[in-house]
Length: 357
View (cartoon, rainbow, N blue to C red):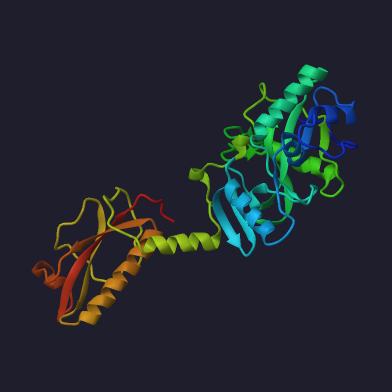
């Protein structure tokens, strides 16, 4: 069903929220006009303040910066990217954001605001409060501000939700032309968060907005905003560019023999050594090449070894695995190397366990 339209209404007059405050009561008192069917979009900062998600911070340097670093480390599950003082991390919730969502704005200078411990649970609590205390059936979205990897600027997104499905899945449905939708999953809770921020803003101290007129409801509380977190197996951007390059360089220095090759076709790049069929190689080997050096040339043999390791790194980047077979001076390989050359070993190449690029 397509809605005829919807409204986004700011909730003003809530004032400063402190630890232990009755946030549901404050919102209701400031907006007695809220009705069943509304979606309450609540900035995570006021949720965190009410829940006491605050840490004390010294006012003087360098103790202040050291304390901030300690808090950031505690809130970080892993570092995704770092550029100067900017750090993009994954939080223990699974969110990927700058500085783990830690905020020093709109709060006493001697404190930092952390994200709610469980934003979905906070949203469920708020929804239950409105139903049990005020007799209202509302949905709740808890929001925070995030950047986007492909675009400039920030936008609010959902980090908690109750009473509304965070994702609408259109996969398997047909579009107006009869084409089956294969990838379309709409982040409805994020769209609600962004729409609400148009009337909340960052400096106007309007932490709550109400969206009215959208027929979007979940079965019960719904799965929450946690279903918006992309799993590691589907995350194509789990590291920043420089971090991914650094990890690749480290791994290239540690490449070892594959335990086995996988069946299936492979695309081989141009190989710098002659191929051979003269020795037994592992099952599913796509190609085997002979590394060789001029007889008696120790320095040449070292250079060949370095070239073989570089080749293994290049092949690994293409999803290809390798196995090194020692064969120094093996007479079976004599016909595979140029005259005056001595075989050092055979590099078997096959399909690896990583997807090919």
